[in-house]
Image (spheres, rainbow, N blue to C red):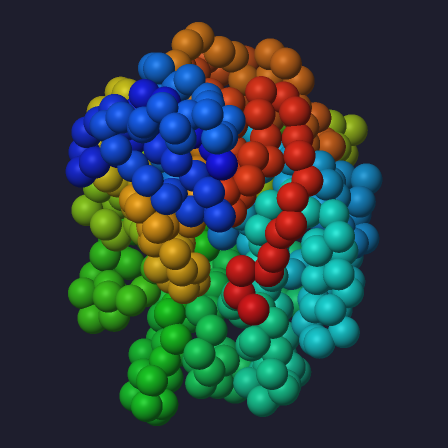
Length: 408
C-alpha cells in the first residue's frame, strides 16, 4: 500500500489537495484526509506542493531494438520514458528488419516483455504484399495498430499499392499513417473515403506527426465528415521551428515556421489535434554530425515537462494537457481501468515537482545521450512514475516490475 499525503490532483481545469491510497494497482481511496490506521499500514509519501497526474502514454516511439541497439534498446528507452513521466510506449515497426508478419512481431514482443520497464504496445507495418495476411491471420490480435509509410523509411516499406491502401481499412485496428507530404495526406484521405463507401465499418485513421498549418486546415475539414480521425503532433513541431533551432540537424517531417507552430497550438485548442506522440527517434551524436545525417530526434524525457511549462504559460488548459497525453490515447487503444485520478482507476501516474531545471543538466537516460531541447529551462519535473500501481521510477532510481502488452 502506498499513501500519498496532501498531493494536488486535477479536477476539471484546476487542482485540489487530497490524500490517496494506492493498493492492488488502483486508487483505492481518495479523500480529504486518510485516517491514522491506514498511515501505519503502508508507505507514506509526503506530497506537499507536488502534482499528481495520469502518466503519459506515448503512442509513437522508435525503440530501435532489434537491429540498431547501439542507438537505443528496450532497457534504455523505457527507463527514459519513466524519467519523463510515461508509463507506456507503443513501438513503431520500421526496424532494421521491419515488423511485417507474425514472426517479427513475436520476436520483438519477447524482447519487450523481458526488457521493458513500462507497459507497451507494438505495431505491424503494412507493405504492398501483406494486407491480406494482416486482415486474415490473427495479426490484429497481437498489435495496437497498423502503420503505413507513404514515403521512404528504414527497411524500404513504402506502400504504393492502391489495393493495400484501400483494403487495410477492412479490419478493426487503428491505421496510423506517415504521410510524408500534403499529397500523401490527401491520398490516404481519399483511400479512407473510398473504404467508407465500400465497407460496412472502418477503423480509426490516425495521422502521425502533423507539422504544418496546411495539414491542420485539411484535417479540420475532414474531421467534420469523419470525426473519428485522430491527429497526432510531436513536441518538437510545437516548440521548435527552422528559425529558433540551432541543434543537431534533420528530422522528418522537417521543422517549419513559427506560423506553423501557432497553427498546431490552435489545432490542439480546437481539438483538431488529439494526441501527443514524441516520435522518439534516437540516433547517435556521431551520426547526427554527418553531412547527411539520419532523421530523428529523441523526445521521451522532455515531452511532459515541456507541456507542463505550456500549461503554466497558459498555452493549454489542464484539461487539454490530460486529454492529449493520456485520456485520448487510452480511449483510442481501449486501455481500460479509467482515464483519470479517480477511485478504482488504474494507478498509472506521475508525481511532478515545481522548481528551476535545465534539460540535460544531469545527463540523459536515452542511449543516444542528447536532446534537441538541451539547455532549455523548465519548471516542472517528474520525480516519481508508477506503472499499474507499482513505483517504477523515483528520483533517479529505477525498479523493474511486471509489465504487459496493452493491446493483447
